[in-house]
Image 1 (cartoon, rainbow, N blue to C red):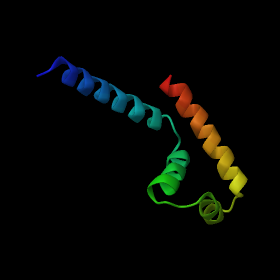
Image 2: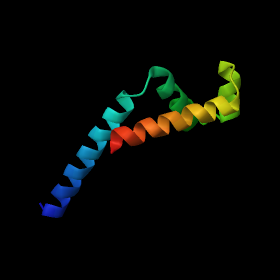
Image 3: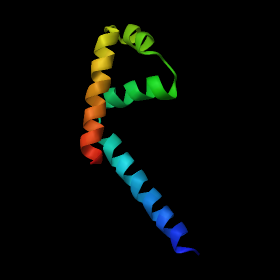
Length: 74
């Protein structure tokens, strides 16, 4: 096997481990928010209505998640 293929596989495996670890650092509610928006295709407004908060609260929560993931993935 070509060394570049092995290097790519190693890089990909390491990347997946880092992503899994980063997501494990999120709270259950943070993971639920990401799942609702990015897997289930809900809008911020729809999710905010479903849990009884404002869309700006959802935006703030997403910013908190982004900062947390950025810190963990450094």
